[in-house]
Image 1: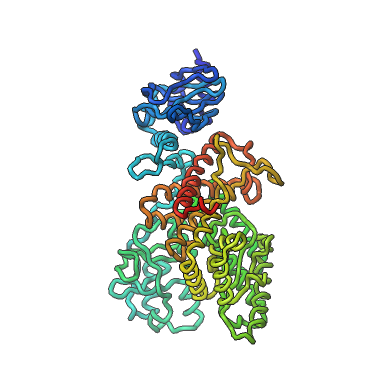
Image 2: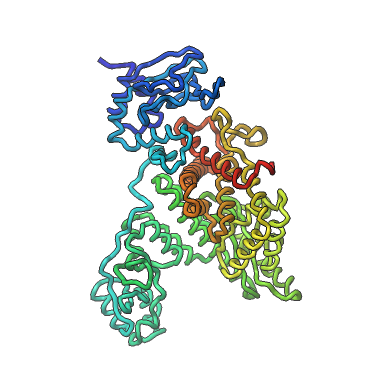
Amino acid sequence: MKNTIAERIFDFLKDFPPFNILEKDQLFEIASNIKVTYLEKNNFIFKQEAQPHNCFYVVKDGAIGLYRTMGEDQILVDICDEGDLFGLRPIIQNDHYLMSAKANEESIIYAIPVEILQEIIKTNTKAHKYLIASFSSNIKTPYAVTSNSNLFANVDSLEKTNTFSEVQTAKFSKNPITCVPSATIKEAANIMSSNRVGSILIVEDKKPIGIITDKDLRLKIATGLFSIEEKVGTIMSFPVITFPAKITIAEAQIAMIKYKITHLCITKDGTPDSELIGILSEHDIVVLHGNNPSVLIKELKRAKNVASLKYIREKTSALLNSYIEQNIPISFISKIISEITDAITIKAIELSLDEMEIQPPVKFGWLALGSQGRKEQLLITDQDNALVFEDVFNEDYHKTKDYFLKLSKKITDKLHTVGFEYCPSKMMASNPKWCLSLSEWKSQFKNWITKPSEKSIMMCTIFFDYNLVYGDSNLVRKMSKSIFKSIKSYEIFLNFLGKNALVNPPPLGFFRQFLVESDGAHKDQFDLKSRAFMPLIDAARLLILSHNVKNKNNTIERFEKLAKLEPQNKDLYFSCIDAFKILLRYRTEQGIKHNDSGRFIELNNLNKSEKLKLKGCFKPIKDIQELLNIRYNLAQMM
């Protein structure tokens, strides 16, 4: 005979974490042993300091308020609604309840026996982690180093799993074919032929100093540029790019894209100065992970017009969709898409330079700003870029600037054709304001820093996240040095930057309700960028600047560096990283789904699991803002 009540409970629970990750028979066992309780308004389920029950609870209908007694006052801490868990202490810590639970309205709750779930979570680690995370979000110090709990232990359980991993070690050939520097090209070619390989490493004192591939033989020997009787050193590529044996697939792919190579040398300590132990080829990576973006990079290198760039950008979007569907780690996706975007930009610059009547009169650098500058741009957004050129004599200034403005216009037009819209605020190198000499940029940054205003602080949040995409790196180093020098001479600037980081309050209201837009075109929608992303981005930028750390623009990398610099706060910073990853994936998914930037969300379209996942990201935002408030004494500036 069917247990219809148990089936109805099963159907309800299966849509909510952690029940949605249990095996079917496990969930049905729970549903068959649940006690259903009806509560009138103001009835207590348990009270603060009471002994824990032998069960915990799930809200079926209604609302349960969690209250903390402070003297004679009852302080409302949280409200649990449909699908929310509460009363978890008997599972995690068999201790007195720290809060009271009372029905704020007529409610139906499910009481789940602790014994049954304890048996299940012994073999279901994801469910165990989720329960710990739910419990830890209500304890006093969720980021304490001594706590075994982790606010984001539910990250894996709330996302689909995938066999691919950022930390999966790449398999490389442990018997690389080698020759000595004194060998001739003919001898090296014979060794390659007899071993049926497409490359040979040149080794001296067991250390790799160069590499010859089939491509070198085709382009340099078959064409008659060099004699086959010459030494291998005349045509070998050097220096080689080396990594340690524990190189991951992600690291290998990114390195090959970045350096535009097809082979990596594996050495004992990962440096060129240690013994060669293997070689990893692009073919090895293709075998390990078939969807290889290196193919797109090769197409970019062959591209001869803007139409080709647009086609590759569209293929990149398809690659992004595929990665998201496969649930590949978002950090890896971000790095890959960023490298391809940079490569598209570089090709647009090269095509534009070819169209100019003369070569650049002086050295210059093309800077990506904003999300592209932080290497966090996954969806196609509008352009944010700038140009810096070498200082020239006054009489040559206007002629030089006109040249770079003309070049910048060609570049931004091509990027627009590719799919990157013009910036509505004209934050582009084609704008004379953002096409400046090195001295002008130094002066501009100094003025923003030493004369902070609402507008100048906003400019700093945009321009401080620059990344050199093309051109002279020495110019950018001088710019960075000048910025840090100005900050050091006017340290109160960091306080103004901190005040700006608190402009957007934590994304939840008092009763854990999402703060939505109150008017305008996006009324009643949730602004994911302003209320969730920017507080984390702004905090990471401010804190990394305060430590005088250069060349760390990516938000995740900034928090990773901060965790090392401030070990006392590392748990908070790691939780910020987890939150940022979840938010980045979610915004990308929403952008793909709605064919937009993914910035504004219709909350009515979110299911319970999605809302829980987003709410779990908001506590680190609140706590990182509290840290800034205390550290920079921002209450006095409000």
